[in-house]
Amino acid sequence: MKLLIKNIKSLIQVEESPRKWVAGADMKKLPTIENAFLLIEDELISDFGTMEKCPVEADEIIDATGKIVSPTWCDSHTHLVYHGSREGEFEDRINGLTYEEITERGGGIHNSAKNLQNATEDELYEQAYARLQEIKGYGTGAVEIKSGYGLTFESEMKMLRVARRLRENTDMTIKATFLGAHAIPLEYKNDREGYMNLLINEMLPAVAEADLADYCDVFCEKGFFTPEETDRILKAGWKHGMRPKIHANELYYSGGIQVGVENNALSVDHLECTGDAEIEALQGSETMATILPSTAFFLGLEYAPARKMIDAGLPVALATDYNPGSTPSGRMSFVLSLACLKMDMTPEEAINAVTLNGAYAMGVEKELGSIAKGKFANILITKKIASLAFLPYSFGSDLIESVFIKGKIS
Ligand code: NIG
Ligand code: FE
Image (cartoon, rainbow, N blue to C red; front, side):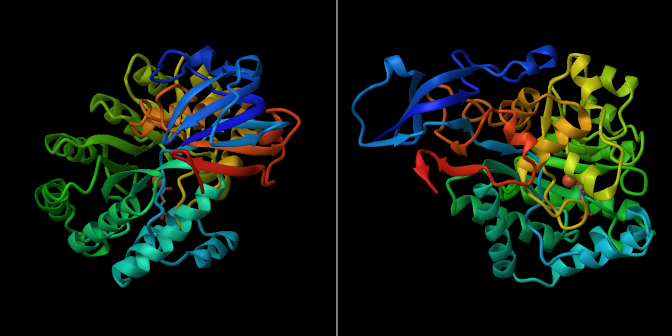
C-alpha cells in the first residue's frame, strides 16, 4: 500500500542521515522542506522531497496544501495508567495547602495508590485506553508509561500488565517503566528499609522475570527517596537489564540529576531545580535532560532553566508527565506553548524537544522522531496554518487535523 501526501506547505524534522539527538545551538535548527511530498509504503516512510520530484502514482493521495506535516510527538514521561482523579486535592491547593502538605496527610500519590489498589485490571485498562486514544488525537504517536500508583507487589504488577495490554492493543509505540519507588507506602512509613527490600529483592526480579518493564524509575526527592536509596535501586534495576529514567530535582536541589547521570540514566526528568553543578553533571553524558513544563504550570513551580541548559550545549526533551496529581493533561501542544512562553525556547527548539529528543528519551530514536527513510510512518498533518510558530502561539487550539500511526490513519 502506497500513500502519497503531496503539496505539503512545510515538511518538518526531515533527516538524511540518522542523529541520536539534537543538542545546544543545533536545537534552533529544524530541517524543513517547503512545498514537499512524503511517500509512505505500508508501515514505513519510503521517500520524501520537494514537489518537483513528487511521484505521480500511489494507492492513495492526500493533498496537504497549506498544512504542516511533522513526525508525531514522542511523550517520553507519563503516568497514564491510573484510576480516578484528584480534583479534591486541586481544590485543597487553591485553598492554600501545598503539594507536599497534601502528600504528608496521606493524599497525593497515596490517594491514587489506594484508588488503584481497589480497581480491577479491566477498569484500569479501560480508563488508560481512553487516555491513550485521547493523546493520539493530540498528535502523540509514542508514549512511555510508568507504574508507581500500585506501591504493593500485586498492584505494581497489575499496572505494568495494563501497560502491556495497551501495547498489545495499539499501533502506538509504548515503553513501560517500573516506578515502584514513587513513594514510601504509608504502611512502611517507619520501615523504609522494609520497602527497599521489597522493591529490590521482590518487585524488581518479578517485573524482570515477566518482562514487564523497559526502564526503572525512582522519585528522587526530599520526602520521597534519597540519592543513596535511589542509587541502590538504580543499580539493582541495571542488574535486571533496566536502564534508569528518573524523576529528579522537581522540588529541591536534591542530588537526583547527579545520581541519575552516575548511573547512566537514559533521562533525568522534571529538573525545575537545576543549577550550574547539575548542568555540569549532564554535560558529556548520555542522559537526556527532560523537562515537564505542564507540571510546573499546574503546581505553580519555577520553570526549569531550559534556556540555560540549551545554551550550555545540552540536548533537552519535553514531555507531559500526564498523571492525576501534578499534570492531569496529556496535551503536547500545550507543552510546546509553555516551552516557548515560559522557558524562552524557540518553536524550532520545542519541536526538536518533542520529536527526536523525546524519541531518544524513551529509547526509540532509531525508529521514530524524524521524517527519515525506513522510520515508522508516524506522522501528523495540521490544519491549514500560517507558519510553524503558529502551533505554540495559538495555545489551546486544536490544530492537528489527522494522525497516522505506522502508515494508517487513526
Ligand atoms: O511526575 N513527581 C512524582 N510523580 C508525579 C506525580 C505524582 C502524583 O502527584 O500523583 C510527577 O509529577
Ligand atoms: Fe512523573
